[in-house]
Image (cartoon, rainbow, N blue to C red; front, side, top):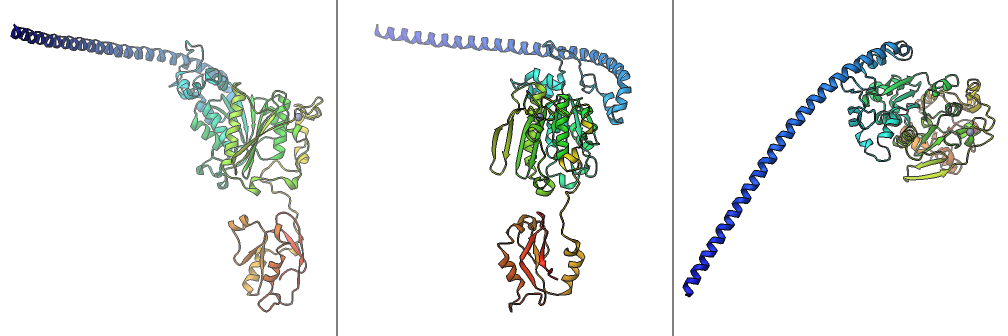
Length: 493
Ligand SMILES: [Zn+2]
């Protein structure tokens, strides 16, 4: 009996094992069937996509033909006007472009079901920007229909123009009357060595089109002045002041106020920079803050005081940001606020600006400088400086007979007579280049360091190095900040 039970149990276990085996087999079969089905679906999907591509290709071909016809018609109608405005290169380029500004190869000129007018190429190019929720399709569309004028293709203007070109602004105007020099390249990053000696505007246009060939760009190689400012500025939605020339700053400001354009203003010097938006949302204009120009003696320029290349780069990038916000209507701009950058300590301060001045001769309640009479205003006289940035500042030099020429000095050094050659420039200037055997005592510390100079003037026996020539070192007279000085009494010679 017991043996039989055991036998039955063994049989049952055998059945269970077989049933489990069958279950596994069924599961495997079901899995294989599912896999086959999925593979079939994938194949069908691929075929469908191929077909879709073919259909889209045919549609694009049709759209291209239509676009070519429209473009040909537009070119014929607009050619006469464009010929008056543009260089032959630009006319040629324009011939290659479709009505949306894109190259014919990529232009689909279609309005997509989503309701915007961007082509597939535009969507691809600006996709990362379109994904920014606050900017999106509407921001990009407004930007692509806007125009921005950038005055100055230097350290500030370089990043401004490049970012505006890259981000898809509709039309870019570039102003500068200077040529590219080697000493520009450390900060004016839009220019390259190959453009040294060529105009900055032609270099900048080439760089901008290199970044974005669909850009509409206009160059103004004669610079901005009182005679042309209103006419040029009135053609743009936003103006960027990227100059470091005082009369030009006032001209740009007054022309922006007269034509009702917002002005993105930036400045950079040494390791400091500042940025604001003038003439926007009832905020002040440049003249409201600076009704009278800074005195000539306190003005500083990059060519005199130096600038670390990246500082205008940072301010310029900020200017591009403000211009993009103004053009696209996105975000909060810097009107009535000023950003101050201290690059040495990497600190940014925001300063609230006082409001519009009702007495301002430009934007006040009874303005005197208007679009109609701006050209008459003597900006050079008002600011006591010239429109040309290359013009040297007037120097207050000492009398000719108190100066020593390079030739005279060379002769003296070769004569073998004893001498003390004093260099009164600042140490960082002295470090760039100096004459051998010269003594560097900066002018600012000359009075307190007179004992050093006096001991240098004495030889080992305690007599003046130059024997019979007496020098009254205590009566050194500072002549001007560039370091010219004279010694009362007689020169060391
Ligand atoms: Zn004002």
